[in-house]
Structures are given as C-alpha cells and as structure tokens.
Length: 489
Image 1 (cartoon, rainbow, N blue to C red):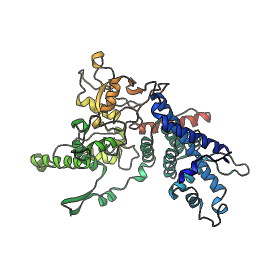
Image 2: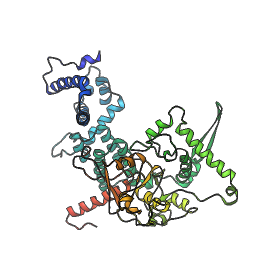
Image 3: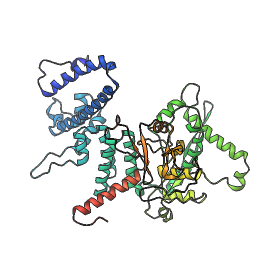
Image 4: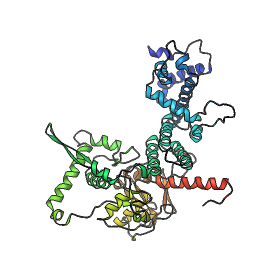
C-alpha cells in the first residue's frame, strides 16, 4: 500500500525524516482526539496547519527548482527524460501541468543561479518574501505570478511593482477567490485599451443564435456587448434576487460570485428539492420581462421605458471622445464597463449627478427620514458598489441599506451614516461582534478580538479595487520621487 511509504523508518535520521515522524504521530493523535479540543484550540490548529501547509508548498517549489538546476532529468535516470517536468511527473507522481506550475513559480520567487557579480534577487521580490515565510499558499502565489506576467509586456516597471505589492498584501489579508478577482481587475486597468475589441468586431460576434429544438426544448446562444448584457442580466436577476424570494434565509455573504452576482450558496439553495434552479429562474425573469413588454402599449409606440440600469463613471471620462484615455466605469452586474458602452447607455437614460470626494465618499443628498429613499440608495450603490463588509462579493441589488448609527440612537438618514450590507452581514453587524464606523464618509469595519487580536479596521477592497490600484500607483510614484530627493507630484 502507498501508505507504507509514510511509515517512520529506523534509517530516517535526516531533519526531514524526523519532522515526518513527528508529524505522523501528531496526525494520529489529532484524528483520535480532535473532538476533545476546545473551540478556540480547534481554530488555532486550523490556522497553524494551513500556515504549515504554505511552508510545505514553498518547499515543493524549492525542490522542483533544485531538480531543474541539478539537471536530475538527465542525471538521476538510466533513460533521460525530455525535461524536468516529465521527470517530476514520473518521480513524485504529479501532473505535468502541476510540475510546470512549480517550475515557473520557482523561477520568479527564487534567485537565478548566481554568477560572477550576480545579485541574489528574485524576479518577484515581494512575492518571494511572502512565500518564504509561509504567508500565502503557492496557489495564491501562482495567481499573482501569472497575472503579473500577463501584463508585463504592456505595463511599466513602476506599475508591475505596484501590482505585485498590492496583490501580495491582499493575498495575505483575503482569500484566493477575492485575490483572483483583484488580479483580473489589475489586468483590466493596466491593459484596458489593448483588450477591448473594436465596434466592428463586436458587431460581427454579437447576436442571438438559434441552435434548434432538441428533447422538447429550444436552444439559443446570446453574444451580447457590455451594455446589452447589463440590460439582460438586470432583468433576469429580478427572478433570482434573494431579497425578493424566500429561497434561503441567508442568501448573501462572503462567497465566490460569478460576474452576474451568482453565489455558490445561492446556487445550492436554488437547486434544493422542489425549488427551480438558478438557470430556470434566469429564464423565467427574461420571459416575464418579455411578457410585460408585450402586454403593454409602450414597446412598439415609444420604444419602452428608459433603461433602469445604474452605472457610475467620472464625468470627465464620460465626456471624452472615443479616442480618449479615460478610465472605465462600473455597473452593478458587469462591474467594469467601458466609457464607450456607458455613453451608449446614457443616450437613452437619466443621468443623476453624484459628487464623490477624492476617497470615494458621496456628499449628503438625503432627506431627513428613517428609511433610505431611492435617491439615497443610489448614492450608496455608487459609493459601495456591493456589500461593504470586508471581502464580501454580494452585488448591490442584493443588499440592504443599514444605519451605521441606529435611527433610534440619534442616527440620521444620509450617505455618510449609511452602508450597503447583504442580509448575512447585516445580521452580523446587529449581533455586535463586528462594528462599523464612518471615516470621512467611508465605512470601515473592525473585527472582534477572536478574529483579529489587534482589531485592525478593514474595508471591502473587492468593490473598491480600482481606487486602491490608483492609490497604490500614486504611492509608488511618491516613494520613487522622495527616494531620489524630489518632491512627489
């Protein structure tokens, strides 16, 4: 049996052999006694085991690099292997893709073999320091490494340094799902002009493609532009929004979401016995909207109502011509959306001006009343973009407006005293373990001591990543200017 390979052997006198023997003894003890642990002991063990796993991850990267530098593919075999990846696949039973992943990561977090006068500096120094101490897993390190390499041909050195530093910090503070989304946002911002197809290309690819009827169902495929997708998904999500259905008691929270706001837990809830699937609800939402349009008299005569889609963008960027270099805006479901697409939406939509400060705070545009009226909620959506609780990815349309200072305690209904929260985190704030306060009009959350002994205030960076990226780039410019003795811009 393969398990026999893990049994401690008398000849294991090396450091790793001793560590393996001790770890095996600990595994056996934990398997037998983990139910006797106190909750705080179980939580501490969970964290320590994961940190140990991160160190083992880094060791795997180091020894893979060692196998390559020692040329074991040709030295440690009677029949030479084609390359180190094939050698690792045969020697330790990992896949070729996993072997290549470890080798690529090793080239960036470990210094090249030093020559005369060569400096022992890894290609990605900040990432190397984090992996060396086990602050993040090799999976997270690979996400960062791959993302940096994808934009390396179009980004400046300053942008790459800022991107690496910011993603490493977020990898330590957040989970891998959030990290993956943040890395994608960095790529979109750095290479937003180069990746956007032309209008001609979009027109050639878009459309509704009828795929025929099979097994009693008609199949169709939709290729939609950003603004078309925003209209479609806004309508379809009216049938899946947990705030308007009793599908589940906690349909929002800090889970992975798709681009349209789909959550893992929401998918599970929607596929429970007797309940329609999310896909079926999306279709129902689209069909219901078509029925409403057909039963009314406005569609053929006036073209229907103006789109009820909320998009935020800097006014100067909106006014730039098609060749301008303005930043993208944000929509509720498609998230990043080009200024060109927003201009198309704005041709048949109301434009509501909201003045945002340099840090994203919205000026008070409210009326003195307890419940947040629609115009104030729009302000919260423009500022928070989704659930403001740290790392939560629930979209704004699934959130509720919460008074930071309770109305009964003298709180007021205005932007600075409001925050968007999903149902789960709304309840969590009311339970009192986490606290939220408004700092210059921005909600900051303080975790309980059992979660973070230092109780460091946090902000949801998932929805604010563009601002965080621009701040990171600005800080890098300031640091470089100061280091060479000049005043920052």
